[in-house]
Image (cartoon, rainbow, N blue to C red; front, side, top):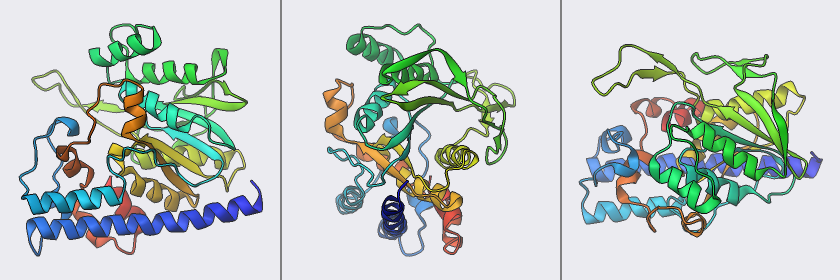
Length: 328
């Protein structure tokens, strides 16, 4: 990268760190408004037992709901417009998830200049729902097999995203341990693969593995641990870049504006890795233009999960990486 680009990204990073701190401070203020003088964010914004989009409506007054939405809009939660990171160059990491979410992430980031790699993350343990299979078939003319996973969807969209697809994916010489923090290993584990290029830029896949433990519950599900989260995925990519001699280029995490809580997570990873990191988010207009079966507006029920902050964050004002990791 050029010196002006490095200086620009450093200035952007400082601004993003200040924004992350402000976001957490505003969440703290909301907790007091809703829960009273001694309330903490973890008391007021509990993790829903359901998937966040299926969570029940919170029991807030009209005034409290308005205050929550004022803060949400301030930080672009549920934005109709795309919110693009001002960081220049480097790598883009797509969060993936639902099939149409991967499509939206690819759409919003497809023409960014100076990018050296587009990485699609995906879980091999989460099976696509029928509405996801229908979305792919209706919009792209391909019916993915029953039992296809989010990792399969990531590979499908990564292949479409590429202008040149390799005959056989290249297994890259990096992976990670299924252990706390997901330490990088310098060997070809299959967790990180190159499948092609887009106008000369690498297109890669990151497999989000997990370790299962314990006996299945009544629904047949088992507990799991050590699945990389936002901070760990970005840290992995940063460690790969460092191993390849790149200490300056930024990483931008690409997701939906529904999940604007990833902004502090990216800053946590940036601080942990001494590298500029940011977030690009597609808006409702982009995802609706792709004919995705999503509501026109983000629901209030999703905000309590997005505003969730663990109890311990108040004890780590001087340890910003830990504070922000707890925000996820």
